Length: 213
Ligand SMILES: [Mg+2]
Image 1 (cartoon, rainbow, N blue to C red):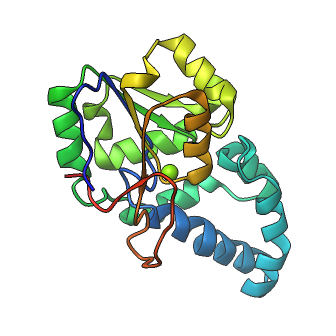
Image 2: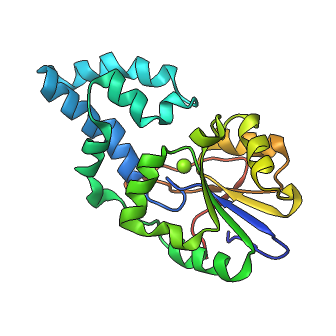
């Protein structure tokens, strides 16, 4: 499965798990934060998980879930500072750069659309220079709703119009793709292996990309 760019005017791309390896984020939220919290409060890792998992679960798919400020306050940890401690895990997914280059040459309107917080985006730009490939970069916090909600797409459309019929959107979240589908975006792709450290088979009702090219 490769991405067919023929007749496409707009390419919308997710960042984490799509262009960049989700291992950074998974490691950070599923291991590192728990470790630091456990050390700080002198409790077992398993106890920390037991304490924090309900907090995480209850905010899934909301802007809070993606907010550095929210979790810094909630957990009493400096999330940005902690992220800086594991920046060596920030990496492009295979062939992502080549695909971005191709988009730049062939497509008039290439946008990064992320649920990630602007401060995290800035950190990732520092280490990837991802911004060189995009006409615009939008954080859902700035539109007032995450990609899971219709409001995000309405606001994105209002910001700068695009024709859903000639738009490609690639994201590694099924819930986000469902939301884009509901909005009417015609060409949707999911990612087969967003985290290079996880090998499990993914299922999707959208086309699954093993590689970009
Ligand atoms: Mg993603």
